[in-house]
Amino acid sequence: MLLFVMRHGHAEPFRKSDETRALTEEGRAEVASVCKQRASELAQVKTIWASPFVRTRQTAKIVAETFDLPVEVQEFLTSDTPVELVLEALVSADEKVFPLLLVSHQPLVGNLVNGLCGSGDEHPMATSSLACLSSEIWARDCAELEWLQHKP
Image (cartoon, rainbow, N blue to C red; front, side, top):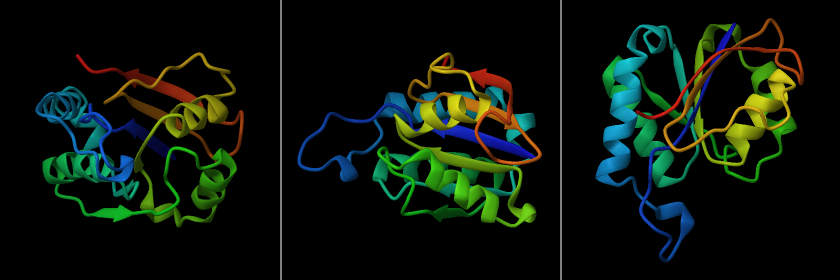
């Protein structure tokens, strides 16, 4: 099975609330560029899960509109979510949702990619970074990193 993990695009500075921070124009362009560069791979995606925060929903929407997919907001996909909670959700998910794109925040996306691959902190996840992992089961140290795309 394939799992794509994406960090939201570049967002505006913190103001009143972290949850309401929106993508900047630069962030929108970065996400669109990554989608273009990885179009053939992202075309396989069947389901998009996104954090409830504005910038991640906006990032997911760019991908969704490019590939004509709906976005499912998952309340648990915030920056401080324990990796184990995400792994439980992945294990519980119907295989029909895969390939799945998960759009969230740091440190969750970095912890998830590195935890699944057993790679410590080897694979950084900057804004708009997109990782593709493959595995038969979603558990720590059980996935292979197929590729990691950073913004141009």
